Image (cartoon, rainbow, N blue to C red; front, side, top):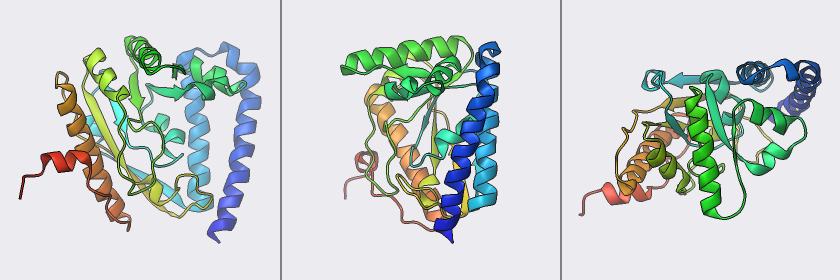
Length: 255
């Protein structure tokens, strides 16, 4: 039954997406960045409806009081396609760092950029970081929060963490608080998984990390908070806790 419902969801997802793009073609040129984000939220809410009523996936948001009104860096765990298709319905004024390839998709890529998303250029690491920081500064000047997946790609539930330097560069250059985000979406819609298991995904905003920490201390704190909370949420959903992180090993006392 799960596979049948997942197949029906996939068909309806692509049908809904195609319909949204068709409707967007005549109205899109008249939308500004805020209007484009609002249109995208409507598309994402439609996906949320399909997830609820076709495959039985709902979601719960915790700790939203940790997200301040002024723009901050949001560093989120990334386990599933779910968060990329849902986050704008939770945080409306949001800019997301995207792979260069996504922005080259016809029509779709154009409106990703028009909505205020940040294209991370390919090439040397220094060039990629510069494009990320420059785009984030521009987004924050426009009043948007900036979200980044600090591991760069989706990670299976329980996989050892692999945090990349981009989040530290944003934290240092922007001089803004960083709000970590934990979740357990991979328990219900796994990485590269066709099957989608019914249940409630929990996404939790954690205590902000104030600006000004040294790079190493910031990375340890970020990883420890996200991985500890994610392991708790995964266990809450019936999964196994993640392996100890590098941050845990550093912060644990010697025997």
